[in-house]
Structure formats: C-alpha cells, structure tokens
Length: 155
Image (cartoon, rainbow, N blue to C red; front, side):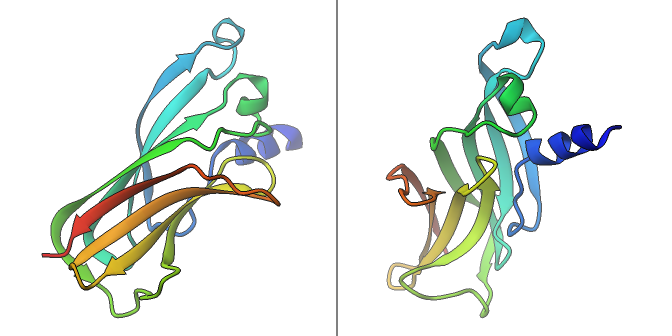
C-alpha cells in the first residue's frame, strides 16, 4: 500500500477517542455518487458507551459525505445528527464524572480534515435524577447551532 493510500485510509475513518468503544450499527445511502465507483453519501449509525457511566449506551446518526473527497477523508460532513441514549442495565455514575454547568465530553468524531468535530457532552441533573446528553458540532471561528439531546433516568 502506498503512503498516500495509507494516509487516505486513516483520514477516512472518524475517531471516537473518548468513548471506550464505538461500533457502527449500520448505514443507509442517501445519494449515489459516481455510479457506485466511490462511497455514496450516507447516514451512519454508531453506538458508544459513556466511559464514566455504567449501564448507558448512546446511538448517534450522522451524515457522511461520499464521493472521492469523502472516500479519502477530505470532505466536510454536514453538521447534522440525531442522538438517542438508553439505559442498558443498572445506571451507575462514577464519582469521577464531572458535575458542572459545562458538562463533560464523552464522544467526538472528526467531520472534516481540519477543525470540525461532532461532540457529545454529558450533563448531570441531580435534582431530577437524570443524565442529559447533548450532541453539537464544533467549527473553527464559527460554530454550528445544530444540536440534538437525549435524557436518561438514573433509577
């Protein structure tokens, strides 16, 4: 494999460094590009678990740009996503989980080669005994107002 092919392969896969494990659940093609010779535009569904909360799994659906630029990791994915989190067992929040108005980042995925990511932050609403997860997009200079939210009871 050439150096360029290795670099392109490394850039094509988004990173989810904060979540313990990210698993692609599936995808749908939203538009064919180049008659199937390259990856189509897609909506990809991934699952991740909160690293500091036992018993919670989150699912995020994100648009991914296809075509040649998407295939080699040079495309900028749209800042559009959906988020759903659900209890998968007894919910146990670690003492190390941040409890602040700014929340704590639990997931991130690169959505362009430079300076744009989708992030998920966790907030604790201890008064109502729920976890609140919010997905949002970063972008250098001008952030995105697009966001999604999910709430999980801590019973």
